[in-house]
Length: 181
Figure 1 (cartoon, one colour):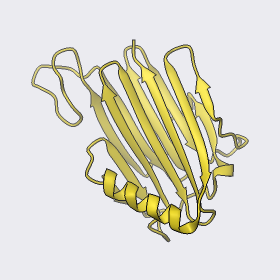
Figure 2: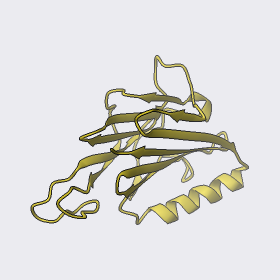
Figure 3: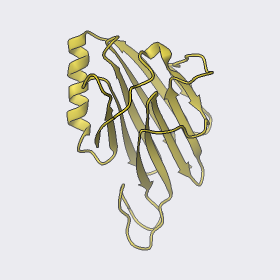
């Protein structure tokens, strides 16, 4: 889903991002909710067979300051935030490995303006029609975007995010994998 956002973005470079687990849900510009399949049937996002209950919910959330993902299942109550967070020093870890089946990895890339525009264009084209994706484009540049894409594969739930900063020609890519027990 492609969303034209009517709000300026708060974070303006990779150096301003902070990573946090367990924060409260922050005000979102747009949210995509994806029900997780329940034991009663192989439901996919947006639909489930009559009588089955979702095993949980995954929320992809666009913030003016980047992204937040909320995962609620019987075994996980997780809130991942990567954003410009007032009161939190900037910190973009390369890897976070937790004992509970959670793994986060991030990298910040410096690109030429042309490379960034090409990657932003590819992301918009590849993810716009995907029911498990949310792409927010901020005012001022079609390359100023935050994109999230979820993948639900049984007990393995994963998501990737991209944060493009045209003013600094940076692209932050993250990948999170959660194994639900």
